[in-house]
Structures are given as C-alpha cells and as structure tokens.
Image (cartoon, rainbow, N blue to C red; front, side):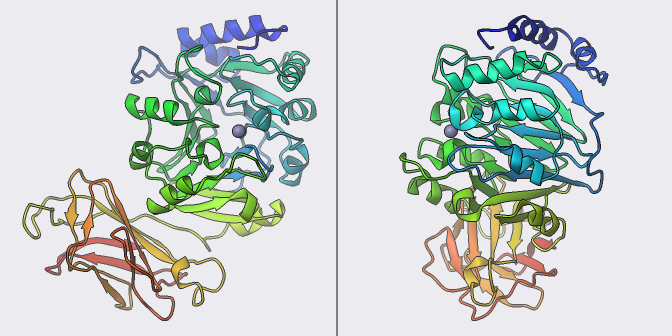
Length: 455
Ligand SMILES: [Zn+2]
C-alpha cells in the first residue's frame, strides 16, 4: 500500500471491503454484480470479485479479447481490451505511453495495474492518470523510495475518484473477460520483483498469464499453490531473464505464445537460456525489441491471432481477421503408452495444433510453419511409427524410439533440420499446411486415429 499521501486511508477501506464481502466491494466500485466470494486459493485467502461492466464502449465490435504488448523499450506496458470495450493497462513503461494509447484510440482506462514499483513498469503511469479517466488502480501495496514512485502517488492523490484495489486474490470482470489476481508472497519476505502482481486473464478458453518481473522464487510459489493454469499466452516474466522462468512453471503453463517485452538493456535480457526454454516448449516467441508492438487477439475457443509491427493502427486492422488464427485440436482417440505395450487404449490426451502461416513467404520459410503435439496425459507416449498428415496426405512418420513425454511437447517443422527428440522435420521442399484451413490427422503405429485437428 502506498506509504504516503491521502491514498492511504482510501486504500485501507477498500482492502477491508475486498476481504470482507464482495457485495461491499461491488457497491464501492459502483457496479453491483453480486457473486459469492470464491475460495480455492490455498493459504486461507478468499477471492472476492469486482466487476467492470459499464465502461464507455469505444469499440463494441467483435468477440475478441485484445492483448497488446506496447513496444516501450526496456519495460512493460500491456493493454487488455475486452470485447465490450473495457480496458486494463498492466504497467506503463518507463516513459510516456499516452501517445501510444491515443494512437490505439484508448480514451479511458478501467483498470490500471502497477505490478511492482520499478521505474520500467511505473515510469509512465503518472502521465496516464493525469491524461485520461481511470476507474481502478491496483498495486501490491509495497512502497518504494524513488522519485518516480512518489510522482505516481502524487498523481493518484490528485485523482480521489480513482478506486484503489490492493492486489489480493480476487477476480475482476473486465467486460466478458475475467482477470484473476493470484496470491503474493508475504510482504517483507522477498524483493520487489518477486512480489509482482500476477494476473491470469481468461476469455473463454483463451488464457493469458502476466506477472511483471517475477523470478524463480515467486514462480515456484505459484506453481506450488496450484494456481498456474495451462496458458495460451505468457508474458515472459522479467523481460526474458534467465531467472524469469523455471522448467516446472513452463511445464505447468505450457504457453503457446510467449511475448518478451524488452529493449536495449545492460542485463543481457532476453537470456539465451530463456529463449531456448520457451522455444523448446513449442511456443511461438515474439520480442518487442525485434517485432515492435505485439498484438494478440484471443478467441473464446482458445484460438488466437498475432499481429506485430511498428504501427499500432495497422495492427488493429490486420489483427481482426483470421489470417494468423490458430486453433487447438482435441484428442479423439486412444494412444499408446510408453512401457504399456503398443496402442494401449488409455484415452491419453494429445493435442495437436498447427502454425500454418510462417513469417514471410511460407514456401521460403519452411520451418516457420510447424505442427505441435502436446501430451496432456500423465504418462509418456511411444510415438515411433505414428504419422502426422495434412489434408492432402503429406505425411510425416515419427522415427522408432520417438517419445512424447508426459506433459511434454514435440514440434514437427515442415522443412529440414536435425531431429533432437523434441524437434522433428518433415523434410518437405514446399509448405504443406494450408493457411486458409487444413486438417491435421495424428495416427498411431497401427493406423488408429489419435487426434484430428481442423482449422
Ligand atoms: Zn522490469
């Protein structure tokens, strides 16, 4: 909680409301969505619910949750836009992000979140508060000694109409999307990075995980509490640092897309170990220092699209189509189990997804398109002799001895390369996955269909 200024008593009152009853919080928030408090968070926390449901509808157009990683150099600024038009800004970079928000047509922020009080996350926040209406402001309650932090407090003090929310476990409705605030390590037990506000954003089956600069300690705690979900999108914690991931965290979350918000820096971000950990899990990795602004469109069915570049306005247009849309298929049949004999009928879940649209010319960038097999079961699968075929019967046969580990992923690239047990190559001379729709069929060694994926 802020240590100084008139924000303090307001903050205390709202924290108490959040812990006591959701109804009280909802009244304070001015939007009554009576819902029973949910528990389920280990550690004695009770989640409460707030709702942001009556925002101005600036773009009440479609059924897409937009998650835009603004290119703010070394720092974070992530804009969430609900289908109904509500907005949340998670961090605000080191410098002024208002021009970028204006370029996107954003005129108000319903929920402003400071993940932790470091300048590369809160430096631009005072300007946001001074420049446009903000309904809710959330932080972890930890004060900081810097001038940047004091300026933020001053901006909040000057806007008493902004409702303060401490980052306690609770769920906030942003239009038809839900933002779940995860439990933090106890105050005073760790450093700023490891008390970053951690958010799970859900829109139907699409799930995004944002956690500022959290490092190994916080990620391990969250995994241990069982609150890390399977995720579609991950904001790489701590700018792709090698302390911003753990194998257990990535095994649990299994992100399909990872976005690294990073610029010129002296820390070596992003670190090679992080890059290879993300890519090794089969995720598509985008970096703001290379790709510019990165806009993810999340769909209720768990599919998503990606657009990136320097011009925010064009991302908005390009991003609305299905051009780069990816869907994830579900297992439909039995699968063989390692050590359990061939084609043992286990019902083990294998998910297949196809990333059909390679960056640039698909026929020249053959390894830019690929299929991903994910074993959602708890036992490894012997996939030697299995085949993966497109709708025109271009097939890849996995070599003898190939294994898809429990919770693991293998990637099948269209072009050539050296297989290493997690990456395989079809060795095709041209693209196989049709960008406009195709069918991927995974069959086991006896020809039994394990999974079919249509997009
Ligand atoms: Zn940072």
